[in-house]
Length: 312
Image 1 (cartoon, rainbow, N blue to C red):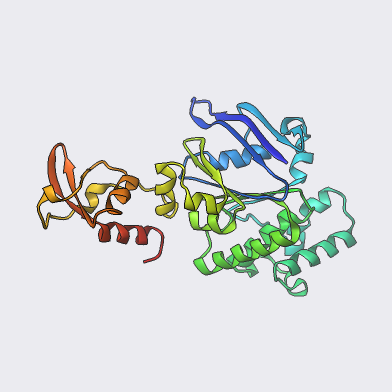
Image 2 (cartoon, rainbow, N blue to C red; image 1 turned 120 degrees about the horizontal axis):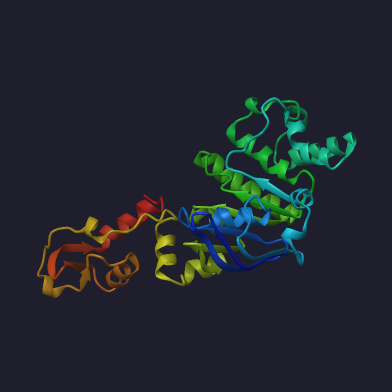
């Protein structure tokens, strides 16, 4: 359905944002792109519908280069949902949803029927909501309208760029459930960008974890959770997707027993090494430039992980 072949993006200042990625997305698949800020995930998404031009390589849709599609034809077959919904405030909900069908010369009866179908699909009563303005809807309701507007002309592909990140946790969880239900019904090809690993694990058929413009690991949620391919992926999962660097020296406490009785960790050790060591020992000594500066305990690191993943 969608194929990336050695795709790169370099900006004028020679900043390399996406670095020679190869990726195939199957028809009907829900693929999640995730990684820390600046990893290239949103740029990768936007190159699919040519909102950002690629620098090298080729992107194919159904065996045809995206560069060979007339731009309007390409974007009509690709729905797009943003974090900032950008509904037109002076238009009714029906008018907002009808924008692309009108551009495609659908008749009024077709449009009316389609709006009814889509609003019903996302739990908004058509008779109540079709005539309302965006300002009369809650944030979650507006985001539902943003999703169905992307579906209005029945596109093959839906691109979603952190669509739920501005919502409160309850609205976000509800919309995630709605999207899962919707995907079972419509079976579109969805490419979804998020920075939240829990959201990725919940929604994706496959997850593509990116780092510095490259694909670090690609697999099902089960594969990635059970078998992180690199220390970066392991730490990214444990940190709940918020890849603030783990600094061991921030978690050091004074020694309570003889250092020579404990395994020793460098103060620069990555989280993966710390976890491996503390899986075998309740505590470890921490050494900096040849001097023991304190110790770290399994309880302390578990508390850190619980806080990062939202468990505590």
